[in-house]
Image (cartoon, rainbow, N blue to C red; front, side, top):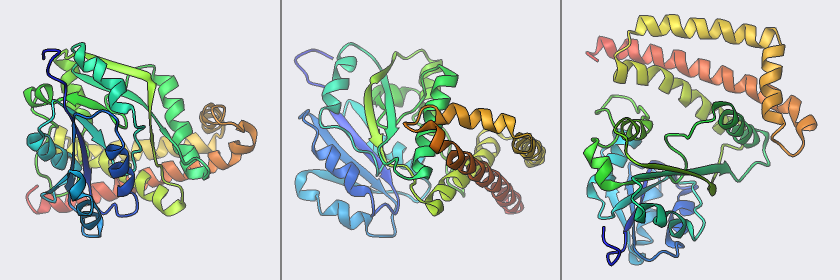
Length: 309
């Protein structure tokens, strides 16, 4: 792209029943100081989310009706209808800083194909949201590699199209797989930039009900993704989950393995000693919710198999 043609961004949000938080994505997208952009929502909601988005129509926000087949297919639909050169993926609770596009546009002018950044939870007053943020920091420190997706990550639309967008088809359950886009870009050696100096704040679950739901949903994905995307046998998954559950029981019964893990998380907080015990029990809740989600997902799979899936 020549220097005389400015890069255009599409800020894309796939959403469903987000009436509590959708204003965060809308207002932070509108506040971007970079002028060459469009703001696009693909929505599957049954609550007032669509109505809220339509209230911003006169400010140029576009709304597409989703097909009710999950967030990843909604993102694919958005990418296929976008007019921007670069897609920036948002969630309803993402709060981009006003200069976010200004900060990443240079990488695309230099020829990069996708950009990931540092994401963090801004609402860490609750032990549940604090746990999410401390776990994120712990995993990032332990893994040492650049993530495939982050809050506010972006990709050149042409590159996404060339690798076939986000993988997977229409499934009878929502199977989150946006990581597959980054995986394919990585495998095809598209040029990537991970800039930890650019941060994107987002909202994390701050009460028990929301925390349990999110952790349980991650358990569901542990069942759905291997079955639908990698064709793993449900009997193999049952053995896998049983083994994981046994290991989880010993993980806590022996105390030391769980204590070391929680210690690694707690030391990233401002009050590691006072936060340690609450984080330990929140970690137990997290593991329990994920285990529950895995078995719930597996039961759903067996039911779907009887229906021909």
